[in-house]
Length: 456
Image 1 (cartoon, rainbow, N blue to C red):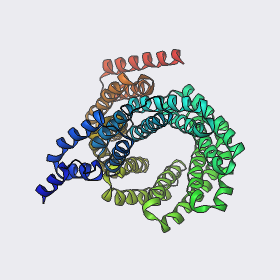
Image 2 (cartoon, rainbow, N blue to C red):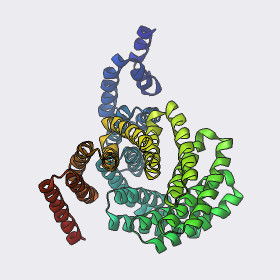
Image 3 (cartoon, helix red, strand yellow):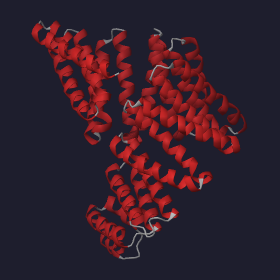
């Protein structure tokens, strides 16, 4: 059978997608021939149909969690766009901007910040150029790309750039909604949600609350008229609003809103579990953290346990998608066990979380090394509390080394974590009566903190 398949694949009129790409996943010996054939088409016979084929193939591999192959196909797709004839033609520019945007979205899922920024920035510049002559057609694309850049800027602690981008996106979408509210009001709500998240991240709680409330006020009437489309968005905004209430110590309101979000998502999941069970698990995890913070330990344990069980079930079928959520929920469960002096259970949960993050970081260090470092820090604290000082030092030192590596590439994001971990390391040294090393770590932490304060 494999011989017949190879013969079929070698025919020039055999489509690259789905046959070539999917077969290369099944038959590794087909992969090299696939890349040669794709490269030849990209270099010598680039067409819109080829771009579409490459996009479909990339999406197929992305959805089947073969991200290394998907990445290569997305890059080939962009190369094909650049080799299309009539590069100055608007249609060609639209194809290129769309390809760059799709690659930016893919890179965003993997936390590949450099690739994400390059792709989104060129896509935005192209859409801006197109919108200068045809604003009604391309301003929505400008606003969407700006909205995605907000996530990049926020994640990399470039808050001024994030605010500039989200404000421009919101202004554009408000203008579009003024002329066509049915089409663009949902986009206004989306951007307000992004604005609220940014304000929340920078402790501008009143402004976050105003943006979140306006977003919810837009979406509730839409969901009344069209619940299948907009109820999931209402549930998302409610979850974010509850987190905001929690951050501002409005615990009763937070509980009410978390509960409403959970009820909506349970209802959605009962009709479509594949689509909405992950959202149920997310709210349960957040609700568990909320209960923990308010010393409702039994309720916290029930919520965290149900969240973990749900994520474990999902991860059985799709480990690449849901193992990160398993690891995060284990971390939260470990903190709960720690607070209630169940140290053995806390250690088991923390260790499993760390092992999971290590596995994930092997495949995608940019996305998961920060989680490895954080979990090591938490594990060190657990060891310290149970007088296992040598193990605490080992875990904390590895955490510090990881944060130092991350700070080399992204100092604004990770130097604060370096300073915090140095302070924790100093405490571990002090408990082990290694006073000179404790003083040295504290001095370096203070020096980093002073530099960070001077920059701000």
